[in-house]
Length: 320
Ligand SMILES: Cc1cc2nc3c(=O)[nH]c(=O)nc-3n(C[C@H](O)[C@H](O)[C@H](O)COP(=O)(O)OP(=O)(O)OC[C@H]3O[C@@H](n4cnc5c(N)ncnc54)[C@H](O)[C@@H]3O)c2cc1C
Ligand SMILES: NC(=O)C1=CN([C@@H]2O[C@H](COP(=O)(O)OP(=O)(O)OC[C@H]3O[C@@H](n4cnc5c(N)ncnc54)[C@H](OP(=O)(O)O)[C@@H]3O)[C@@H](O)[C@H]2O)C=CC1
Ligand SMILES: C=C(O[C@H]1[C@H](O)[C@@H](CO)O[C@H](OP(=O)(O)OP(=O)(O)OC[C@H]2O[C@@H](n3ccc(=O)[nH]c3=O)[C@H](O)[C@@H]2O)[C@@H]1NC(C)=O)C(=O)O
Image (tube, rainbow, N blue to C red; front, side, top):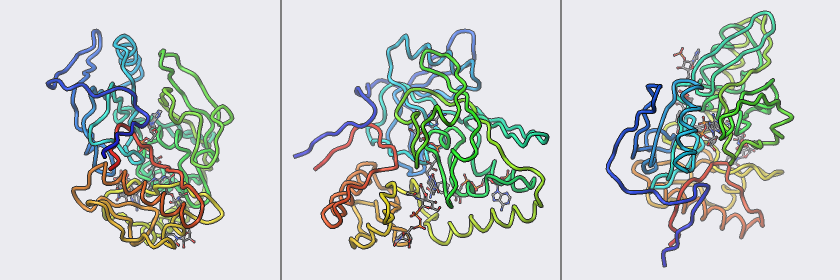
């Protein structure tokens, strides 16, 4: 029997020919049936029913207003490095932040402000080259600033919540709000923004300027090398698939269950790190989804822990 499960995105993808809509008074183009495969780090996923990459906050507001008029569900897309998008694609409008890029370093205060679509690792390397401490942990996390604020991205015992001062967030109604870490109810890899429809447009972080750039670069590079030695970077993945349940790490639990190398289709539990699933070439989103469920079942049977996915699973999947 084939059962269809629906995650996060309600409704069905409509089948129609690809077309473009230009919003009045802006040069913002909304396209239909845009493939999402190359826009996620797993390199899987079907098309967005509608897709737009606004070039500024005004275009973003116009886009939200159009989606509200059309009554469409919205999915926000950063670098797609923590997403599993269904092979059937996503209904409604996918809004990508790729053009919302800007960074500003204030030497007097040590405050750094970056647009939602700015690259987190690029910002971290830039801060290191300037001799500013606070982002040494963030290299190798291939996401955006918006994704990091929402996911509370972290590594090496540091995380986004440690340095965030505030973030600008746009509501579905198009209203801008200024939120602090307290408003976001940060916990390990969690914030109130997850699963909601509020849109991070930029964030400000408190860093420490005035350090020796060579020393900050050395620490940053050490984190990067440690990651390269312990995590598989050679094939598409989403990073850690599951949150660590503590006190034992998910990778340890999965390895002890004997699942390293276990494969469904072209999706494989990585040999180098058991909490990574790799797309070995031509995996479908459903292969990955079934592997996630298999790992959960096997680990629960052996350890009585239900591993909770860190990866955001979106759209419809089939369970055989
Ligand atoms: C090789 C590899 C290594 C990784 N290592 C780490 C690691 O060490 N630590 C770690 O924490 N993560 C890691 N990750 C996971 C991932 O990079 C992070 O979760 C990252 O913060 C996701 O950012 P993104 O821009 O790709 O977000 P996406 O994957 O695009 O989106 C993630 C979620 O945030 C939402 N979202 C994105 N942008 C916005 C926005 N502007 N406003 C509102 N909602 C938004 C999306 O709707 C989705 O729910 C790794 C991933 C890979 C592939
Ligand atoms: N397995 C997977 O699914 C995926 C893995 N990845 C991996 O994730 C990691 C992060 O990817 P990515 O987002 O490209 O970020 P990277 O950390 O690789 O690089 C981002 C930018 O940071 C700067 N930079 C990188 N290394 C240095 C350095 N040693 N010194 C100074 N500046 C540096 C460069 O900017 P500039 O050119 O401006 O100087 C670079 O373009 C990479 O290792 C990548 O291979 C990425 C996507 C998917
Ligand atoms: C990659 C991510 O974040 C990573 C982050 O990069 C690293 C570095 O700080 O620490 C976390 O990994 P992790 O807890 O698996 O860290 P590791 O040090 O690799 O492993 C923890 C423990 O599990 C053991 N381990 C790990 C993998 C494995 O196959 N087998 C195993 O036994 C290790 O020996 C170690 O004792 C984050 N993962 C989570 C779910 O919190 C991500 O969130 O996507």
